[in-house]
Length: 557
Image 1 (cartoon, rainbow, N blue to C red):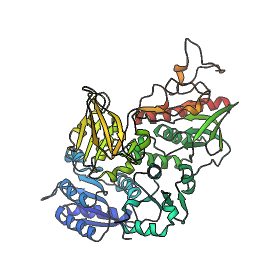
Image 2 (cartoon, rainbow, N blue to C red):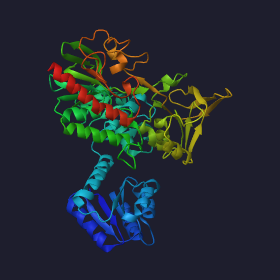
Image 3 (spheres, rainbow, N blue to C red):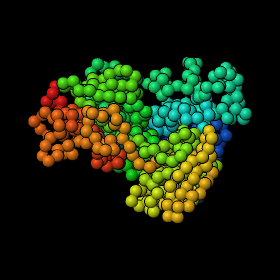
Image 4 (cartoon, helix red, strand yellow):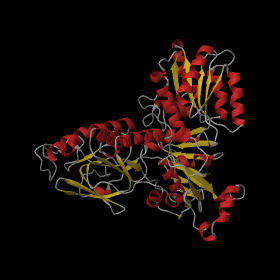
């Protein structure tokens, strides 16, 4: 395959030569560096590359150029290469204009001219952007293939699992067999019995898995499903932002650390289509990117990540022992619970039956491409629902948000409210509730009630995405860890009532700030009673918890 292209555009010849020189020196072995002295000249290059079926990884564009500004050039160029990363070159006096361009043209970064030395001011930025692009760019496909049906819950679960774990896969919808020769040829090669038991996961080595469970899929896809050590200083259950932060800080400070995640690192935050108010990312980033970077960081410090589900915990003296669904057991001195929350179920006739067949909890990014030309309904009024609506608006004909309240102000960030109002194909319906869904094998219609008039309207629909609140998954801790009536875990001062420490507490101190009623078992993130449901606060709790873990270990080890 031809090398991906890095395209530099600047009307200042000296600057352009410097850009080309610095890019070639660092990236010439893996990328083809091209340059242009104006926007129109660059557009000619872009069109020719598209005709040749080449790829552009990065645009490095001057803003102020005669005839065509950098932003105007990008508006045309990204129509042909929408996945290319975009860096704007600007003089010191243009900083405000560059910041405004982040919103207007989707700029990933802006660099001030001059940037010498490139080792400090150019390469770190380009390295990060090319890493992100490489993670998302689909090379010639040689990985896992999934043959199934769009309306199959099992197919959806498989696609979602692979996507959230950043495992490249090719989705082949059997309904397209009449028009897609690749699907048609594959179906012809399979036995008739196999095509009746879809989905089928076809591995690179030729092994075919019929309707595999996620645990079976994880095992065959090369995930680590069992611990390699007999004992760990710290075991973390849950791989959301809080768990990942704890893993990074724990391992970097010398603790033998294992993280156990039943689905995919990133948690609910990892499913977010866009996080725009996370400190240090002025143009925002996707939840998937945040999770991927955190996983790379954790592994760099030696964290062992296991794809498995924790089903029980028991205490044996100084040891905390986790039982996993696959029958394995993990032993540790300190246990940190960071299991986060899952979406609260929508109680309406037909929802349970059609979940995964047009009805999905969360943003379900794997289904976005399938909604082209359709009306999409999003239930919820918090940031997650707003971010999902913005994401689906890029594909669907119309996105309708169904909000129970009369306003978004109390539940959604103002920047997101502004974006929704400015998006023409997003419609917000306040004081509404889904009372029933309809369809035989897949979603076909939704009954929506107006809470002010009690009037019910039945509308056709293929996709309904539900994001209506949080419910913790902590039943596996019942009888061991104290929880509130909804299942959220008490910690620290919450456990001291009327000046008394929790029942069974034998230490001559109060429970630590993030410690549960069991010494050595800690809790962080959304699953903790009274936590602030924000990515940044989860990361903060995960990092702070390690100091309490160290204090605990210093007394028991």
